Image 1 (spheres, helix red, strand yellow):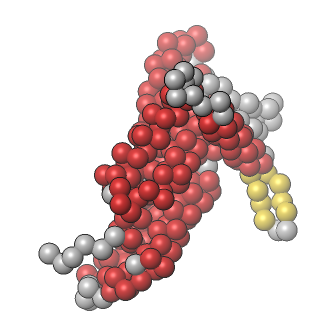
Image 2 (tube, rainbow, N blue to C red):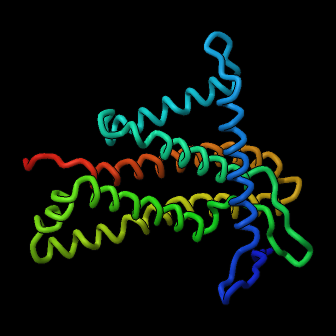
Length: 232
């Protein structure tokens, strides 16, 4: 059965109420985890949450080190940590259950299963990467566009435009398709119980991979505008 999102209009603009609600819930969960992991931190007797947060930070540092480098990437640890936690938790919210009213309005879902959400995240990433290139690497940032001539320049501009599209649609497509599959399996009744557990386990893996890929590509895009390599 097809479900639709609850919408409301404000200033002539239509908003998805469920997406806004899930964005808020995801933000609150990430904030609680961050505060709980940082409070009462102990060197001698760290909690399990503190150990997890430290492992996550080290994981993000590894991503940044392999893309931007430790010299230029120290200032992006907070960005990478925020992205990977927000996207992973957002991906997970639609897995356990869904809230659908009798008139088939879907209230509970992963915020990343909405193209507007993944598109907004992508716009932030792309605008930030170009802003950093313009402000911190001005000469080489603009000179880079003059390295291409004729058809190669057109292809390069197409690549610049396609980056945000692929970044947004990759995350949205994987999470949205996963939630569709869950609804199909649930519709099978008792026969879907075993496949549901298997698919949810696979969905956790996909959600983690997509959070990693989005964070990794963010750092790659920043490094491409921020760091200039000498001509080879």
